[in-house]
Image 1: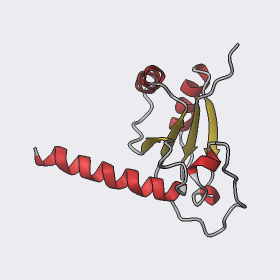
Image 2: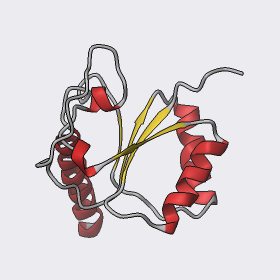
Image 3: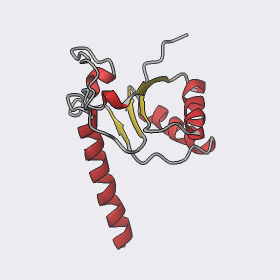
Length: 132
């Protein structure tokens, strides 16, 4: 059996029934899950994803707070990404708007900064939809 290279960094400020549904889809698809704690929000995305050249720091007691669920995906091709999104819909996992892929550009960002960028983009897209 091939080793899954896909990884989902999963951050949630509070546990819910949706966590079980989400993790069930990931497990069935053979996708690795890494739960991110509030103390890890200042870590670089590359370190959290286990990328070469990135080292995790000690957990910060004063890390910035992320107030909502966040998924950061690593190692997904287009087909597998579509399978994942379809699987989440089919399992009736409530939408998680804060999603991103690990890229060479954001791997060096602290997770909190990536979250802020995703939040900003989401707000801009929502405003555009509402103005139409």
